[in-house]
Length: 261
Image 1 (cartoon, rainbow, N blue to C red):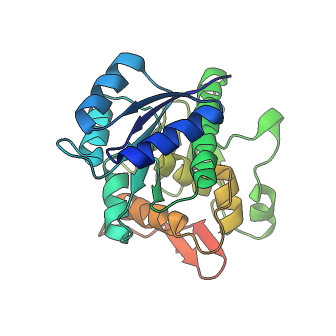
Image 2 (cartoon, rainbow, N blue to C red; image 1 turned 60 degrees about the vertical axis):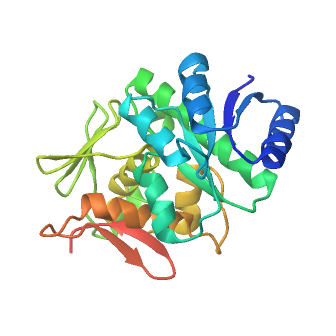
């Protein structure tokens, strides 16, 4: 199946090189040079995935992302950024981006992240059709760690036939991709939702970095990547608000776990 990519990059050499590489990889590419053209192309062509530079003249990549998300456009967005500070990456996630690549980058990493985004989109669509959600085990198989949770005395997530997961005071509706903590609905990006659902389904179980990377991105970006830490930190800001009991915990050197302490 040929996937369509909207590439928005104002640097002509980078845009030309990426367009050529993506085309050789088998993608159908529409390449534009600024945010205004990117919005027009997104509305006109409805691409399968968007590759969006942050720093562009006029309307920048963050504003493009914000506009599309405000329009309820859930097309997966991979941001290209020269900004390496965590705060800058968080700004991209806050705008609604699903993932990011820091310049300078290897084109193979861009390909890997695009494949991961497209796999998750396909899996999410299939899950919505069959009543499941991202992270639902096939054919009734157990999720990794769920059986161990009972044996180890950790509390388990409650999973209803409707696909709703409940853990602590969290309620996550996989088919509709909505989540609540208590009575408060959480505004989550695609990646944040899938990460929270994975942690909730394995409540009480410590999930290591490799497992989370494999289940969420379909690709392990290695021990030097800060990708997961940034997403967890941002998810905490939405789930563990001041005054509430923290649910998402770091197990240093291992990974993350959702539990009530």
